[in-house]
Length: 171
Image 1 (cartoon, rainbow, N blue to C red):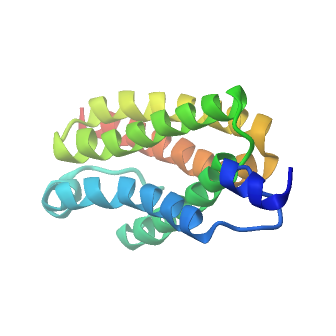
Image 2 (cartoon, one colour; image 1 turned 180 degrees about the vertical axis):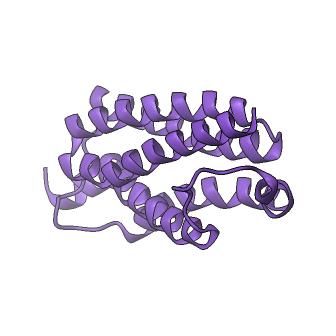
């Protein structure tokens, strides 16, 4: 099979880049963060500052750049898996990715939108588990994609500890 046929099938060669697919993958991930943030902006500005927080809480300005970077890395990882050969491993990896992305968006809506600290903790604990499963599934398809998700896994682990402490301090 020649390169053109492989590109039409979606599994291309490793040296070529489908820029539209890459940008779409990044955009999907960025939107998963932006949309819930826009929907909960009032709560972030008014309710969140009133909560007791632990000393290891980062300054508010840190969250935007960190999440923007993490969503970028997630988008590139998604692209790498999407462009791999169509098979069962890829389908499982993409399903896991979709599940974690939905939980990611849900956390913002639950924690901020519903002002439910314990509910947010439940969602983020599930999110952490599904990210771990996603990293494992991505590693079976493309190790580079799995590696790109490690900073996200670590940040959500930190965010889980932060969510837990905020819950304990405000219970």
